[in-house]
Length: 433
Ligand code: GUN
Ligand code: ZN
Image (cartoon, rainbow, N blue to C red; front, side, top):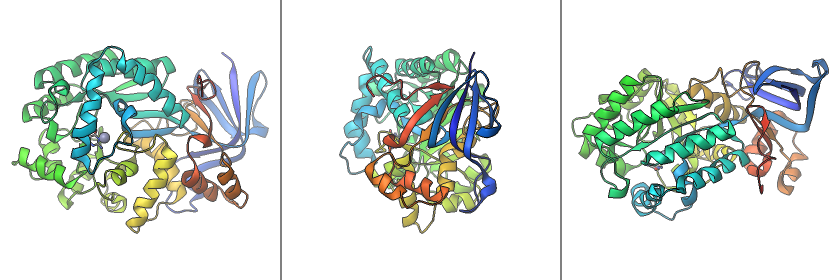
């Protein structure tokens, strides 16, 4: 196997930056070398000190080499329904989403969507994502099979949902258990695939199905759990009507043993103090989905309050409630949401969150999310002068922090110059880019 060396400016985080000038939080190399062998990073350092004998050198100067972006929450089965015109969450679900997801019952549909979905992820520099599939097991097979073809580390699972949705989308408590069990056996730990047990949310699961999810979690503690929590006022009221004995919305998932460090909770916008404490105690992750929260008018995520109370936080697109596949666009909208909360998100903190921070949320920081010996060579190359507008601004940029802020504020897929998945070029090799 040949050794490849990527040359360029290199940025990788060791930990969350505490301030905007926390230089100890990251490694930054002006002229760096990332050595790759067998899909892994084997060395990182100054190019001048790298051993280049027998290696293929790919020169990405003056661009920035970062770990690939990680998206903690999206629905790949909603790839074709972004930008659906709806006033709020439940209207959006009933009018568009549940109609769209029924298409995944058809033979071949999931396979075709999966190809386009992964092409889109790669174009936008996302090398790992945590995804909801539809309730149909074949949508999960298509999701993981296509990831395997591309050698991508992906997390996902069949949505469990057995009420308050069209018949064509509903499973039963028993079939959701049986199908999830079979899918875990087929996919979890196969290559880079990891399974997420996925009860959609309290509204679409009966207590019997929640109990099945609880059994699955107990039987497969190494799998992730993903669901939605406290996104929208009407959703919260309806959930409490359906589970009147639970103390609050978080209490529903708590009562069924679904909360742990392996749990990813989309949205978490309207949590009371008790709920915040429960998330902190269990280690469940609150996933910030800014473009979706603005698009559906769901509310403003309170990052500071959650973090100050010890809650683990990540960030995601929430396609198709979200309005962009791009983590750069997501960071930009996240910044604006927090501006409205009078909370600043500095560019180092946001790029940390989209890379190492989200890897830590998954407990995968030893595998992905940073550039260091032994990590997967899932990397992106960022061009802060990718468009005329960006170039105009870049002319006055003087620091790395300014460059990162320019990338997140004005950047999109055009700023992703190249993507490497397990050491192999993945963007420039896309067909019909
Ligand atoms: N809550 C339950 N299902 C969904 C979904 O598909 N998208 C969003 N944004 N929220 C949900
Ligand atoms: Zn979602």
